Image (cartoon, rainbow, N blue to C red; front, top):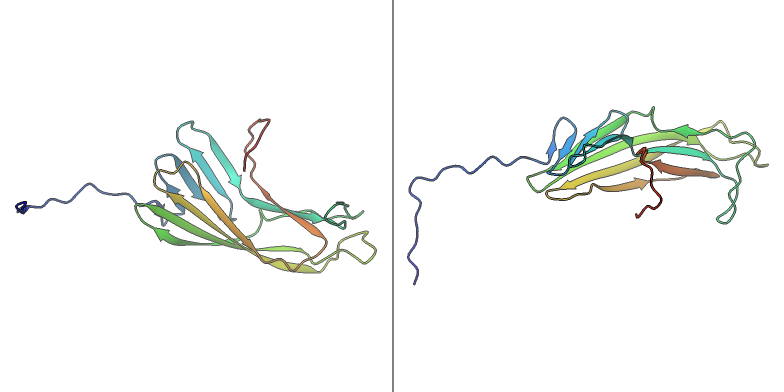
Length: 171
């Protein structure tokens, strides 16, 4: 049998950094994510130095068609979530993974008028919850978004303005 090897004078190991920090950051070897007060985030790709700002905001516009035909109301209102205040909560922070939860309420028109010419002025508070998760050693940021939609006659688009030119995208 193997003899036990006792350490009589143990020393602390190297400091391990947490992925999520209380100041609204997620960071690993490859990516740095900084949360903004309106629920968007900036992402820095450390290897290339590219910084992508104001990612993951929403635009909403009227759509009175169906699944096969997209028609806009004559008098349409397009709104964005950029002015919405967000509540951010650090859900998890360890040496292996960090997660921030972002909650915002996006006010959009409830529906189009019966004739489909314009959107009503009455507004619906659409709750949107997003979880951003970054793992140690990962070259990607995991994004999960839950939307509770009770509005009608509209389309909602998540925006990721990168200012990059490309011919092909894989999602």
